[in-house]
Amino acid sequence: MAQDNESLESLGSKIANLSSFLSSQLATLDLPQPSFHTNTNPLPQDPAIQLVRLNLMESLERLQHLVTGPVDFWAKESCLRNHELLTYDVFNNFNFWDAVPIDGSASYAEIANLTNLPEQMVRRFLQLAYTFFVFAEETAGSEYVVHTAASANMAQSRHLQAVVAFNLEEARPAATVGVEALRKWFMGKKEVPEDIESCAFPLATDDGRRRGENIWDFLENFERPGQPRGYRAKRFGDAMKGLTDMNMTMTDKVLHMFDWKGLEDATVVDVGGSAGHVCALLAGEYPRLNLIVQDIPSAELAFRANIASSCYASRIHFQTHDFFKPQDLSADVFLFKSVFHNWPDKYVSLIVRNLLEVLKSGNHLIVFDIVVPSSFEASDMSTSLTMRRLFAAMDLQMHILCNSKERTVEDWVNVIKRADPRFELKGIHVCQGALFGLLDFVFQD
Image (cartoon, rainbow, N blue to C red; front, side, top):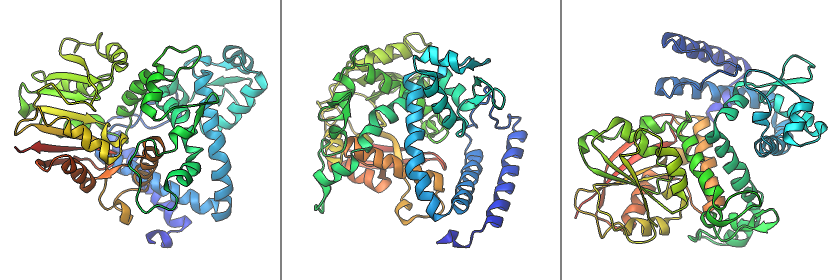
């Protein structure tokens, strides 16, 4: 292993150099330095800064692993992660975020009153959160709690809250029955089944009730007392917007790597486009494009909330459509953003085949999704540790939720051509340090 020669001193020196370089980069760009203060903004989605940031994060991880040691590592990871995630779930469900003023403080008693929890439990969960820099004591030993950068960002973004809610309320329960799912559907088999139901998600429960056959029916129809029907589907749309704002996705930057301007007044259909976040990004830069979002009926509420009051309301239209049924709308471009990775291969091919009746030669099928580096499985060190971890984690997320997977360029070509060999991959747009890539398939009739 390449890291066998790394020592405490070599890693410490590397960390010092990378920290200094990142700090000077930010200063050159006249950007503020990272801090724990509530008004701290995320680092910019600049590939050069992202590369240094990822290298620094990797070196810090390696140093921490060396210092922790091979025995304490297992005790720390197997116990600590459970309760870290539980704490965030508690904060999200009982709205600790709003219980503390952004520019002020709140006592433990005040937080207990606002969250309707015993003060002792409020203290106990906050004590763990402090060690992750989520909230802080106003002063050491104080009875008052203040926000940190991490907790303040949660308080100020319903989209970020939705990301956390999806991961902890929808995905985490499925992860807890992941072993059971492997025994039930995968153990003893050489080939992976392609049914969406053959995963952990249907085995998980919500308030003691089985969730149904697949995650999409659950998001649409599974009710919870005190919540409106379909609230999970709306929250999922908010979570997708939250992901576009994260450094690791670089959604805006990767999206604009494609030559949208060259399409002039083309019609672009964002299939499964949810609340219309991607179309809003396109509308802001390319005023001649005709933009349509297609999704299931429950997504329209999130679309209206996001688009109706925006300056793009007259340019982006919503149309109800089930992509498992034949497409009836002709368009120059069919865009699929974070859709296909939710489905096993046979479903992806079916979705693509449903376009064939309206496709003309030269039409584009844009896959805007996670693109795993082709060297990933060989553990090529050119992909940073942080990114390799994210690719692998997202792959397992798809496994437990949908019996799907994340795909390399080769995987994407195979699954699209499985639908119809007339699709040709004409463009690959990826950005170092980004999870997402954009693949341009052109239909050649």
